[in-house]
Amino acid sequence: MKKILCIGAGYVGGPTMAVIADRCPEYRITVVDINEKRIAAWNSDHLPIYEPGLEAVVKRCRNRNLFYSNDIPGSIREADIIFVSVNTPTKTFGAGAGKAADLQYLEKTARSIVEYAENDKIVVEKSTLPVRTAQAISRILHSNTKNLKFQIISNPEFLAEGTAIADLENPDRVLIGGMETPEGKKAIAEVAAIYEHWVPRERIITTNLWSSELTKLVSNALLAQRVSSVNSISALCEKTGANISEVTAAAGRDSRIGPKFLTASIGFGGSCFKKDILNLVYLCGYYGLQEVADYWEQVVKMNDFQARRFVANMLAAMFNTVADKKIAILGFAFKADTGDTRESPAIAVCRQLLDEHAKLAIHDPKALDNARTDLEDARGIIDFCEDPYDAVKNAHAIALMTDWSCFRRLDFRRIFDLMEKPAFLFDGRNLLDHEALYRIGFNVYPIGRKALTHFPAAN
Ligand SMILES: NC(=O)c1ccc[n+]([C@@H]2O[C@H](COP(=O)([O-])OP(=O)(O)OC[C@H]3O[C@@H](n4cnc5c(N)ncnc54)[C@H](O)[C@@H]3O)[C@@H](O)[C@H]2O)c1
Image (cartoon, rainbow, N blue to C red; front, side):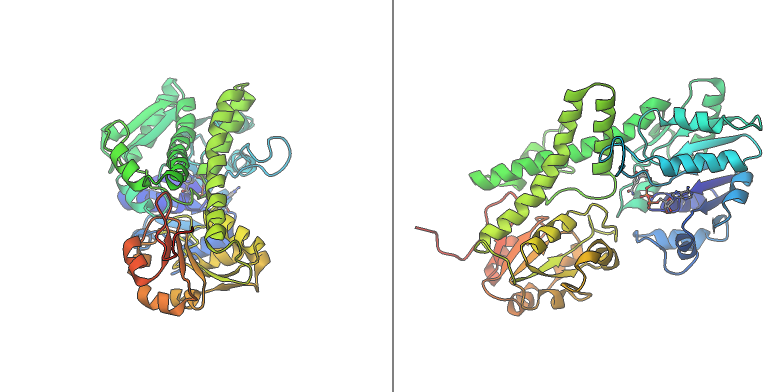
């Protein structure tokens, strides 16, 4: 029985290993983490992360061929293939602070492998890493004095939170990069053999190591760039009377552009897009390509601008003050179907509203615990509401931050009756039926479309 180990039991390691265990019953999969609480949660009825479909897969495989363990040394010793799926956040200190990837967790993992390994192994980079990290890992691993040989493989993960299980079960592609040597090719084939259990061979792409590492950064940069491009045009739409939904629907009909990922919003969030673009920006600067670095950095700047613009629009609509006004925040997760709030635009919006002395009531179906942690310093002045109708009671405005489909099914007539008047609704995701809300009596402010208000036109 082949033994696979995954180091890092987070949003990537957890779901990815669950699906591999499910699809490869003859492999034994172990997942370890330095965070013992996380491992305990994976072994409990309350998994540490929420993903549609995840619980069913975990329950099918756990203690069959999927094991969550705190025994890092023993698991390293036993494993044939080790996936490394630890966090690689943006550095907050020293050289490259604010842009470069903080690789300390990755390096510590590599050093643990050197310390405990007793035979040759394949080490798979699952984490998103700067291009050429495999070289550093290889140097650390080959500093062992036990004459052990390691093959480094890059196998970046393209799952999107909220659809992780569906993405893993039916990926657009699996990318596997390795050394262009006979041993490297053999290692690529071994990792490909895992995915071949359920992924059609033509969707498994093999490349050299550096292409694979760079592809992950580029994929996220291109996706984020698309969001920022649409959002930049949403600002122009609001000034000119053009409707962003009409513009993107028509532009997206060009098959070279395509219709997906063209929705205007308060901006992208999540742990990856910003971090990975900044990582790309840092790399370009490091290699002396300042113009390329500046080009990509603009994607992040545009995203920050969109959140600021959203709050500026709220202020302008609400007579230039929100001080002492209750504002209901609907949704705090960075996107629907996840409890993850890392880099959620809701954080920036809430902080700006708090600076304006607004009173906030936050509701989210899955992310309230994380919201409490994110806004820990503002405890006491924010209400965290399990019930959306509590959040909107006596509120002057609603700011919709997350595209949870359940928000569409709320009783907006009841909500309108519960709110102060005039009742404002700022739809940061263009999720709701704006005409219907307007007919109920709301003053509705979408993104990139004309506001629907009951106020008489100014003279
Ligand atoms: N979250 C996503 O949607 C996503 C998608 C694709 C790729 N990625 C990338 O995958 C990587 C992991 O992301 P994540 O969201 O799963 O992060 P995460 O923070 O949820 O999980 C990482 C886990 O690694 C553990 N860890 C850190 N150092 C360790 C060590 N030395 N030994 C054992 N465990 C250790 C942490 O305790 C944590 O539980 C990152 O590089 C990220 O960029 C994330």
